[in-house]
Image 1: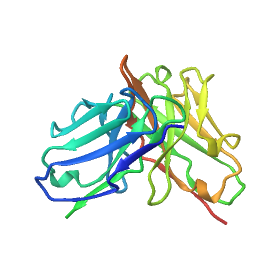
Image 2: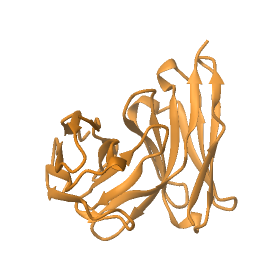
Image 3: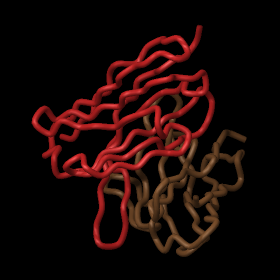
Length: 107
Length: 121
């Protein structure tokens, strides 16, 4: 099974900060990686697919990068509505797996 | 507008069964593979199972193999998860999600609101 390791698990930040979350895969997954945002009591929401493609309707302050085993999600200027938990997911092979999550919280 | 609506959750005793349903609206259901994903209270996301277009090809996470069965009825635009021999660690919110893909990658582009399953005596 492919393991995804997200870091950090918790990210205290302030409005306007640039934040970066890293997701490392235990083996190469080319660009079969997606990022989701989840707010309390809500379903996950797709942000990025194919490692770096922004889903329609997602603000351009979100960006993704990487390929192979190392990936990043960057929020260029954190907004109040961005405080949430973020998950990476690999879709290279079954069983599909998610990273452990990164909670972006108010500093 | 794509919409997925789960139902069927509830409180069930260990060892008993439960069937979850996911109703699909706003798209041609038979053209999409579908997934179940769960989230235990306060924990992260865990992929559970996938069923491909005609329902003949399925995959499961190891912890549910032999206990859970994913199925679909394309004539009714419905996805199901039959959960047998339930255990306390199956307690979670269960989401259905639509599989989307292009030549470069795959992703889950739509999710339901989830249904809570609590396994407790």
